[in-house]
Length: 407
Image 1 (spheres, rainbow, N blue to C red):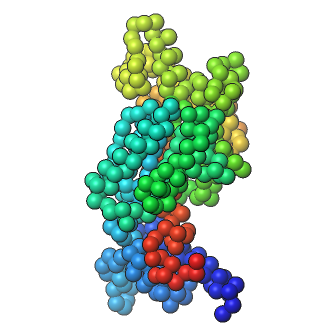
Image 2: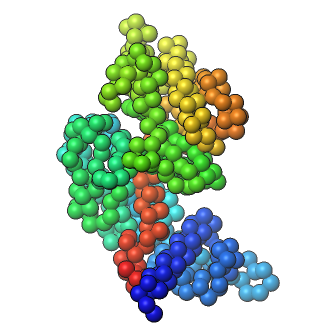
Image 3: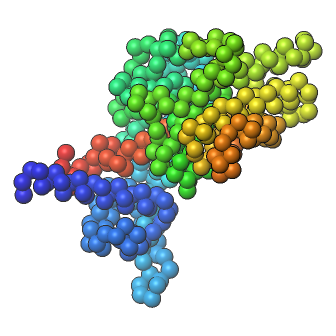
């Protein structure tokens, strides 16, 4: 067989392996016969792939299913023990690390408050410490780790994928996050914008599991948004698509770190909401952290309630623009602020309805994320899983040999 024919055959086989893995992931458990019918592949092709995936440890037999008239079929599922994924969220004021199995179940989690923007050295030391802790807690050996995904509160340029934007995080200029962690743990590392990862999590495992086009908005220290089209993150030409926080809502507003005035970040980012609440309260009550403000709003405090409603209206302007430009079927809002429920969502929906093309608003679902602040870390681990099943030979030791792939 000529070289190009071998290459073509390997590409077809890799594509079929990915189809098998994605189908088993989606169905939780399925028989070989159902796999062949679902994918339109020959039973012999599926049998050969399944045998290889069982040998590699990506699949395992889960017992017999219900008979359709003959012998009871053996059911297949992803092996939730053989391999693990690490997800890291480097937020502006915290670091969160999770370890997940291939079924997206969180086996261990570590969270630490930390000012990351001005201290890259200390942040990465903390990330390494927390990764070590979750691996120990979950009893995941280093050889079981497929890779590490890292979420950052910054655009990530696809030409320099291990680095963050020096415009947004100037103290991190020249810091190779991926190189540092790959050198420390010896596994593939991917760095991605935090809101993109939240969107990916929602698309795979959350509200958007059956939705092809969605937007995820993270309301935190800053405002970020991630876009998913046909199940994949949409990054744009330079990795900066979906920067909702840098929409200039008020041209006479405060100066943003990006150089524009009145960006959504400067109006409803955590610090700005707290300052607004303090000003409205006229010294009667101080809200030191966001939880103070949220608790007070839920308890009926007028200043806190008004501040959350203000956040909903300003966010609504941004969401209306997003809907008119992107027309997603689903918008998921994440961040601690969503626990205020309709205090946020009622003014949000009202503002969107008044500033959005009616056809867009009438067909979109606006919902709160169910996983809170861990969405980014979980999405980071999911990013590694997606890449691993697209290219198993690059992530799983022995995969090229076990799956008979030309590399």
